Length: 301
Image 1 (cartoon, helix red, strand yellow):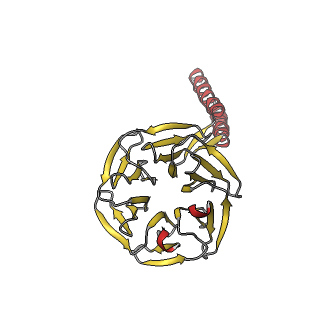
Image 2: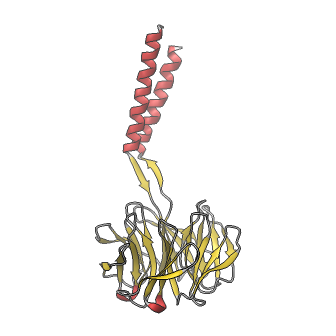
Image 3: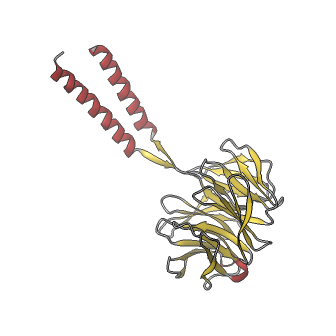
């Protein structure tokens, strides 16, 4: 075979593979799974992207509340019944990560892998290193509940006792971000990709939106004792609707629908880290194309 023929043949193979890869890219789906704490049966449920609920952890917990993933994909939850924080591997193995976290509610991780927990009964935010070393990160926040980090590493905290949102900088200095437009029963927090902060206002059965400038508005309403709040990469919000044992989905445009039902006291809600999964048809086509290319190469030798 002449060199020009070899180069032409290789070029066709490369083009075929490239087309296959592009087809896969176009067929990729965002496989985003929710994890939800069931407060009343001491479990964590997994909810598929289509709303199907299955068991993830059914033992070893006691009144679990908030949820957060670490950088390695392990899931953590405070046990209000034990004043501990549990670590759960992707395989569902439960172990104790921290003890003596009094009335722990929400948890959040910073970019260095440190865990922060709101301690409602001590009015503190507790910092726990990856090695399990605890320290007081911020104090004097009355009845802290929800936690969320902004893109600059500042921690925002729902303060039920003052009907306000507190901002804690990286040095632990506390300031008031918003102190009006909220009830005295505010819970989980979540930031969208534009820097807007969403707050679960349980007493008003609503989700409030707060701009980066501190302007408060009602984003969605009509819930039933909402507590938990998760957000996906498309800025859809997922709400643990404690009063009717459902998960509600709110699109970025504010449309509310029932995403999952049949839970038992849903509190914490978190969206698992995203994995890109090719659609089965495009994956099969790519594999077939690669296999065919290999056969042709063998025959040409």
